[in-house]
Amino acid sequence: MADFGETCAPGGGGDARFATTHWSLVLEAKEGQEKAAERALEELCQAYWYPLYAYARRSGIAPDEAKDLTQQFFHQLLQKQFLDSVHPSKGKFRSFLLATFKNLIKSEWRRANAQKRGGGQVVLSIDEQDPEGRYKCEPADSVTPDQLYEKQWAQTLVGRAITRLKEEWEAQGKPFEKLKVYLLGQKGSVPFADMASELGTSENALKASVHRMRRRYGEIFRSEVALTVGHPGEVDDEVRHLLGALGG
Image (cartoon, rainbow, N blue to C red; front, side, top):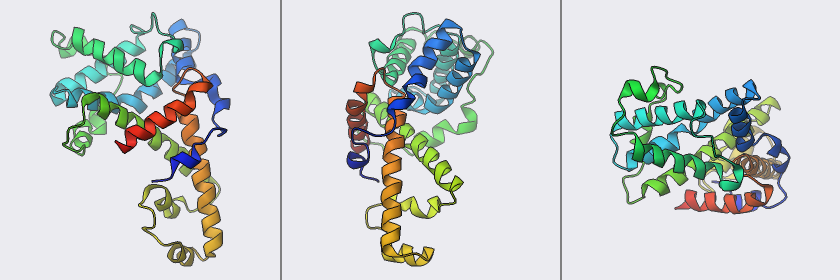
């Protein structure tokens, strides 16, 4: 994995995107001012459903019930039932989602039936994304539900950053699939000399390219984190927290 301690240093390129943070999208959807904000909120549901599902499963909830609860949660979120008192000053976006999901579990899941949960409307097709298949890949260790949620939240942001980096590099004709081993693989697993020979370039040129890739990845990851907090000053602390979650 890349050294985020270097690539996510203060001064990255993400602060300019605060005009479209997840919080601002939620507030716009809450106020009913922007249909685009509601569509964006649906996209957020698609991006962040798995950390909540993993939390429910690690809490001892059966697969079908965890799936129903997750779908119910996002249905109610999109119906704005959780947004009456929401504000960025009350915490980070990840904390808001988990706290609200916990309240749903406590107050509704035992008495709600499947029809009542979704109101007959499925806003998030979890079945197609194989939730239990993903969960079975989680390590059977002593990680608590909250710790698993934090780790999966961090991994979700990593995935979003990698997707954006891949799109950027491939649009420029750069061999991302070949070089991503220097982001995701164990350090030193592929010698630079071997890869340089395969790509028909010099070792120095390859190292420079990898350095640029890592730096850009750090900027993108930082910008993804920035979307989930309420103020630019919170980004550094949140990056450190998520790196700790990934390493735990």
